[in-house]
Length: 249
Ligand SMILES: Nc1ncnc2c1ncn2[C@@H]1O[C@H](COP(=O)(O)OP(=O)(O)OP(=O)(O)O)[C@@H](O)[C@H]1O
Image (cartoon, rainbow, N blue to C red; front, side, top):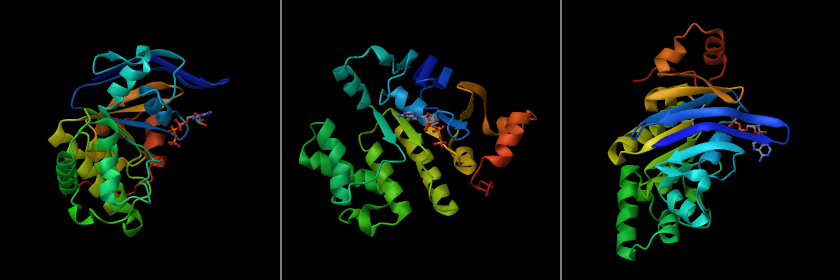
């Protein structure tokens, strides 16, 4: 579903992505780890050209992303969902209007079809009762669930998550992680998840990579990486994670 070859991105003399190559299979959930500032968000942005990479090749769903014109790129983006840290809901719009927004913007559904999609997605995130609420009436966890609903309402083939559980308490964070996994399976989506939350990664990941010095330095399942005797990984997993609760039930 995703193939990246020798991706490079620098800001002036600051090389962030030096030589990143990776693959994500269809239906697979890939978690991306790395210390703060290693370029995880830059990698996600380059994948959909919210940022232009300096060099390399990106293939998504068979399309050579860096050679697409703007129309082709927009068509591809319709099949990709983003849940970025900054993806706030529009405060002046109700939950219904927030969810309707991507449907109106990118697709030609009838009002009745839109309403049905909104109801379906709210049922999926267990928040149908919030349909006419304003964002200010929702808790942080509810906002995250509505944000998630908004990014999957168009049923993207590929989802890109940038720290989906940041700022949530451990219980809500676990709920969101299970919800992401469930949606993933029911909609058969492929996903790339950047996270500093080990519990979230343990719930979601089929496989993980660790970015370091502008490259994919390690790759494996979460148990493989967390039980490794490699000094960097030992240090990384003992210091990096904000979520202390490592028990997955
Ligand atoms: N638009 C930009 N202009 C200049 N430098 C940038 C820009 N965007 C990102 N960077 C730099 O690229 C580096 C990687 O940033 P990025 O946000 O990808 O890190 P990250 O691994 O996602 O970090 P975190 O885990 O803290 O979110 C940082 O040093 C950042 O300052």
